[in-house]
Image 1: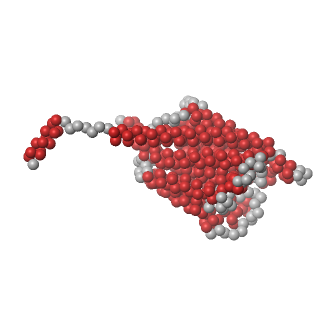
Image 2 (image 1 turned 90 degrees about the vertical axis):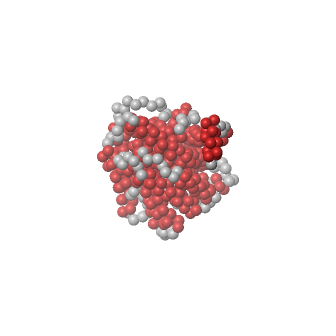
Length: 488
């Protein structure tokens, strides 16, 4: 009876999240494809400058930040919020109440992304990295996020299972982290901008907290839920996960200021020291994942949700080590102002976070909607396309960035020669972006097809109810009615 009640409760929880998740993931899939198209245009412009040169909306200075923001704000954050909503409900065994509010918030979020991207492409960007959206788009995003976070916390407070799991720590911290850093950065850089070098310091602080801390909190919190589920073993171990959580928050929030920044010397020194110390939570996460998966007897078809999350964790470790390397002054002398930095950022965004979200969505969305993926083979194909796309995209940029930095530091090599040396690497990375675009299109196809099938089933049910013949009253019922009328 206990297993039956748990199963029915899980079905009730999934059903309560169906519409909000479709609203969040549907828009996220759309913006993911848009970001890939914009990134392809930006990449082609480096080795074919005449490509779309007559369109001012598609110059590199507008297309590249629009591609980055479409990936981060259009896909990563709504996908992370949708997964967090589902995890809170599942871990707490509490159905989501008032689902209309998250649906409205999801629509507002996607509207804010549309307003922000339109502002960037039309030339109304703020000019601050990862904060390019104009004020109107930022206000909509912040309001939509607060609605989603409030409903997630209300669901967390109303949980029936009162025990706290490691995923809870990371996800709850992430819900509070984003509005704090986003509102602070907008307040001091857009609404009432400060002057001087403080602007750059706040910009670095915001970018470091958003790209490293927030993405890590949501991604690792998600992975810590799915690792035991896929391996069939409990998470190893509870206290090591708690240690990783606190050290990530303690050290990660100080990262972001490059060693060669023109600021008071103690700031880049403190930031570099904190970045080096982030190796502690990174190694702790790697140890937890290794101990949990080591000796697992559960086997999953290659290309399934587990493969996405496993690749995402490996990318997290690698991108974090690249971030730590760039914080070392001797290494940063070579990698600073090169393509090595964008390679690390994209590995963190796409290799780690997006791949982890793909695995989580492919697992939870069929359970929430009530039927399997329309094209499961395309989901496996997407894994291989995305994995090889990330490798072809990131590895050439990282290697080319190191070579570019060495040439820039050589006074006997002209600047143009150092720049031309990157062309073969950029062409290879464009091929990687093409594979990523194909993989993202397959993901969007699965999400849109699942939404269409669900809406079609709703229409069928409504049509069946409307066209169903009315039941004729039985003879006894009509006799009782007649007798009642006589008595009256």
